[in-house]
Length: 204
Image 1 (cartoon, helix red, strand yellow):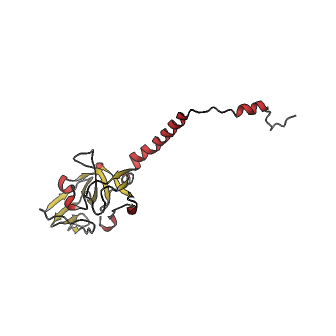
Image 2 (cartoon, rainbow, N blue to C red):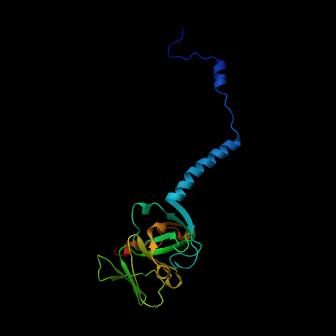
Image 3 (cartoon, one colour):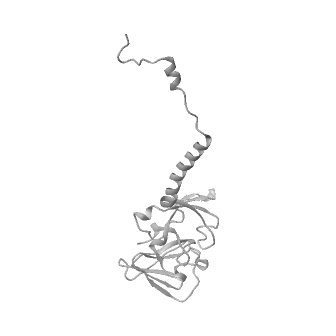
């Protein structure tokens, strides 16, 4: 008599349980592709995506051809800081992407006099001059002044003589910012996390 905890099976039952339906190879490819899409697309849309630097506007900090990973997530939780390198949609043509450095923050007044950048805000009503050892000096041009409203930023390239930035096309709206430079992957000799970031040098 069988114990109540034993299964009453036959060799035929075992043989049937081992029969497995083979899948078509295309099914596995489709499944893998769908999983990859479900992972990669949200990551690229909301978390991080690659960009390649093109042009000389950020030399010597960045060189044309360098490969960057851009952090798209952080600015959903915190505002851009002065000195951070950001990627954004060019206000005059949103199909193009620019890389520049954050210079002026919402509510501040930026003055450029004799090639120097002066920031005036609530904490510094008389203004302070930015110390920017990483830049190519600006050509001496007529003084300019820009007061930023809510959600507006003043951005500039590090190679000031060769950069098209807020001096020429105006302020940058917050909604056009894609994210900040998070990782420089190529060339391998220039591998760096938060490349070019100088936010710790400035007073916000």
